[in-house]
Image 1 (cartoon, rainbow, N blue to C red):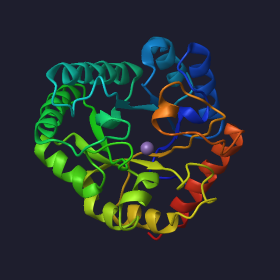
Image 2 (tube, protein in one colour; image 1 turned 45 degrees about the vertical axis):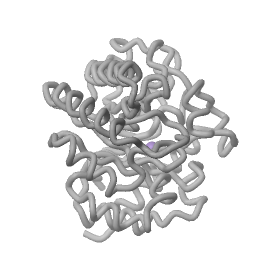
Image 3 (cartoon, protein in one colour; image 1 turned 60 degrees about the vertical axis):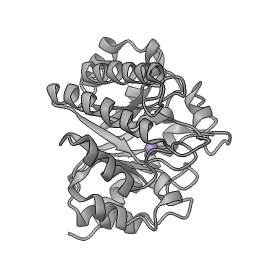
Image 4 (cartoon, helix red, strand yellow; image 1 turned 90 degrees about the vertical axis):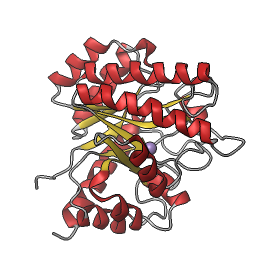
Length: 289
Ligand code: MN
């Protein structure tokens, strides 16, 4: 059965860095396990050979999306102009890389560092987020790209923790190509359930991460994926659905620490990915018309 959503897998299922060998492995494994899209985290993009990666993706018939969070010394939610400026440059450089890879979706915690903040977001910090992302959205629009605001839990950001927060931020940015990115792992911590946020966001949903409550094998935790997929069907969502999972078995310098990946939830990325691909397809084909 033809699915109406591109199914993606996060590159951290395959490799912890973006060296040429790691990218080649991630692309080959993504294609081999039947996914349509590879999501590449740009947290460590210095090593990335963009032209070589683009060629490999094309040769394997894969779409690509890129994601990232910022850092406390390069953070557009800061009140310090120098810190904001470094964050804005990271975002712009990452947008260009995404475009050069052939991607149309640049998403993630584009609005702050990934980490525990010691105080609430300030008004000045929020104004900086709005200003920087308004400019980034214009640059994205010139490239026919969309930006995703990934809603993250309270331990990873203080800017947007719920779908309602993300819609308010997107309204203030005021650009049609800024969409909301929901992630079931974060929703489990912050939202009332996995259904209402999907209905609230509706046609402004642009990207989805599927993760278990502990970020391991789908179905091995307690999340109500049946309800979540029914909600996606209710809003006729046709965008990417990307499986995101982390284990200390694949360590990414920086990102693993930011996301508190201390435990080994799986060893065999290929078995994990094959299982996830089937799990997603089952839920998408079993949903009501
Ligand atoms: Mn996510």
